[in-house]
Image 1: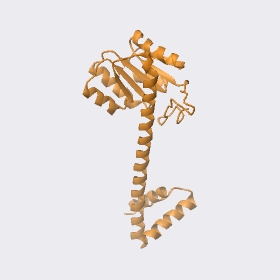
Image 2: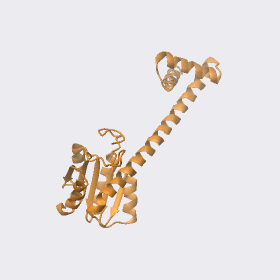
Image 3: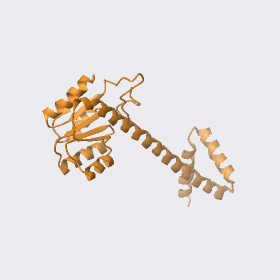
Length: 215
């Protein structure tokens, strides 16, 4: 079962729900201009029980095609990618909030680093075999979910810090204007927030806005 539902930027597909069985309902997009190479991926996925597998044969307007399909996981197979082709794939990876596994025949350190920076969950160099597909898929989704959780925690921590700064500034305004102590200023904002069914940070922002108006 997926950690969260698909259809929003925050969704995190899951590959192994309770019981150890993969979620065969995952919609998987294969980006590959080569039908022969794409068949390796498709055969491996279908043998593992995945039925919603669709190939994108054209990389032109790839992002539009990906948005239209709305897959849970994206597998990109590039036989001999040029620098421009890799950059296009990396831009796509940054834009979509989905696990992305990229298969290439050859690579270098700069390309690998660029893939990591772009959010590619698994970057596989050489050795494309259908027997490896499911384990790579599991790795791709696992890394994506781990990064997603970490990013969520970082965003929450940043939001909490930003809110604390707003509240502290608002306390300072009330302390100066009303000759309140810090505890009194905070208690007033907390009481107002409760009475108006709002968050304290919203009340604090109102205090700061009012202070700016009456400067």
